[in-house]
Image 1: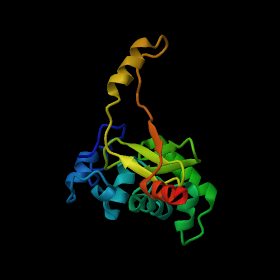
Image 2 (image 1 turned 135 degrees about the vertical axis):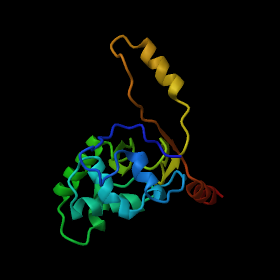
Image 3 (image 1 turned 180 degrees about the vertical axis):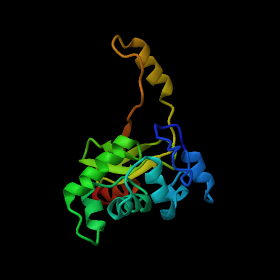
Length: 184
């Protein structure tokens, strides 16, 4: 099941466009898996319009790169996927616009630099990061809301907590096997 409760603008002036994410998803055949398969490339122009963002070939390509990836990716990874000459600054600016709109999630991993993933069409989730090879795996669960509520209650300065970020770190199976082989 997908999450559609994020802040997203509705555009009532354009009746050809869907009015919200549910309308956009209902216009297309969608499965309810947690992966980006919920969104097809042909939905990307309407998705940009829904968020009242200008539709350009560069933005569509950037979103398509994020759509194809199953894990968060760096801006350098995205830049390497572009065939045409789109400079790093343009990619970074577009990513910032998408993050501000709520279309893309910016993830600051403690082990590495910033990575990005598509924020729409999937459930809220967290990540496990291998400290040896930097493999990233999505964790499709979140039971932190009671802790989030407790944090708000004990806070003296905050009225509302709007979100959270949680990252797990560990050793993936492949790295664990390699280390076991090296110690034998």
